Length: 168
Ligand code: SF4
Picture 1: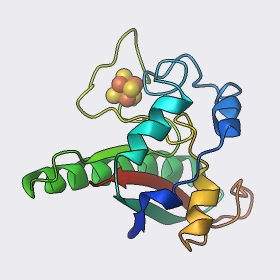
Picture 2: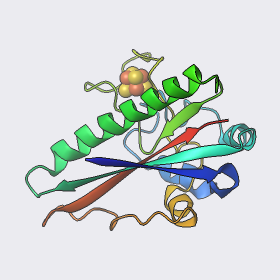
Picture 3: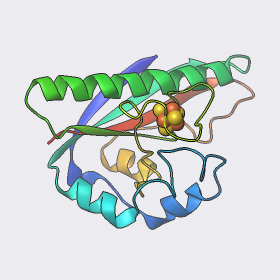
Picture 4: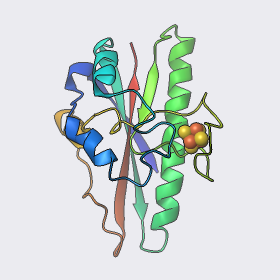
């Protein structure tokens, strides 16, 4: 697995209310503590992001085969999430104390999924799509080429996962 970090000004982060609507059709809707409707709404996130000047897109790519697709998908989510948390910590140590990250897709810290309340709130991070971010357009504007999506499971290929670090 490989993680690229692409520095972008936050005006390149594209919001689209349709992203939050798509969340309503996701199996995590109403279950994950970092997905809608358990997180603040669209306007909150736009306002939050507007307070930052700089961000980094974290783009993880990984090769998969038909056989290991589910494993790679699961492990890649955990790896990207850990990289974002580590990057936040690095920022904090450089006195960039407002650093905060969001993950593409839902929080995958707990293998058993979310329970009644969040088990690890210090590591849980909100979903980019749930915040109303159009992840694919944001990557396009930032010049990041993503592999075909949805990822074709049958013949193997390259999958991508995206995270966002708001720096300062
Ligand atoms: S840390 Fe665990 S319980 Fe909390 S949102 Fe993430 S997966 Fe759910």
